[in-house]
Amino acid sequence: MALKDFAFKVVKKDKFARCGLIETHRGNINTPAFMPVGTQATVKACTIDDIKKTGSEIILSNTYHLMIRPGVNRIQSAGGLHNFMNCDLPILTDSGGFQVMSLSKLNKIDREKGAIFNSHVDGKKFFLSPEESIRIQLGLNSDIVMIMDECPRKSDDYKLIKNSMDLSLYWAERSKKAFGNNPHKALFGIVQGGLFKDLRIKSLVELIKIGFDGYAMGGLAVGESQKEMFNVLDDVKEHLPDEKPHYLMGVGTPSDIIGAVKRGIDMFDCVLPTRSGRTGLAFTWDGRLNIKNNKYQNDNTPLDVNCSNLSLNKYSKNYLNHLFNTNEILASMLLTLHNINFYQELMAAIRKNISKGTFDQFHDKYIDKL
Image 1 (cartoon, rainbow, N blue to C red):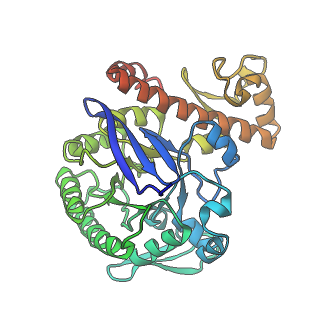
Image 2: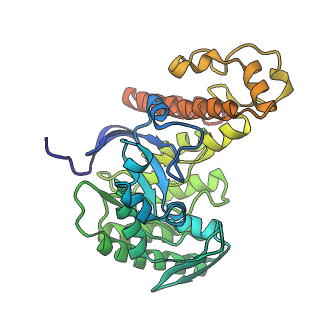
């Protein structure tokens, strides 16, 4: 059977909220979709088999971290990222721009050379140009490749944000050229422009002219409020191309996701469910709970009595409280898996309500609860 190239179609709309289907040669992805984050070729505290059992259909991995450790050559020698980490799901890799901004000990941006930065691990100097970012992602054998962009910190300085956006558009053109013709892979553009409506719209319009397989909203989850983030999405929602997937990078809480879906977003990633799982914070349909709290010491009910997936409801709050307070590794494993499973239950419920035409009611019920 011939391998499928990347394709996307909208299956159902409820105002701006949409159910869609992304087709890849590694499998289909129902949208809205949440991508568990496998930063360093692993979704922390979980096996890929368990990730698949939660209903996850795609994961994200990180160009910046993998270029530093173990290096693209080592992963290529193993047959690519899928073989390296034993993952047959589609994989999206981000370009590294956000990590250059947030993690590197020292960084400098050069229009032609790209990002020049020192590793947060050992201080070693790296150069990451748009061409190099694409080369690395293709070397990893990613299914969805992100362009190289500059991701500025939140700022009210219009000139600074405009210059950053212009640079990202220049790098977008170079990224598209470096990507070339790669069957069965997709290249997404990244919209920048901070909190400024005119810059966001200009960035999107210029990216559409270049032409990409999908469009991501970057430069958010950098310290802005939820209201500010939703305002940005409201500014661009009527300008996003209907026939392409829309991806909100690095977001977020269940409430963030519900609000963003209402504004036309199809794809999400965030470390929150896994990071929270390692620190004792659980996401449930009744809201968040800190399982390390003393009040759960004699609570023999499960985190979610209705969850039969992976037998997660066999473990009581009492027991999980004990595991966390004795620093047992199993605590992180169980709660991380619970959180990823909850996120996938959330996405399934979102898709169901869009299909039924009841998403607004679902949104209003849970937007302030989760």
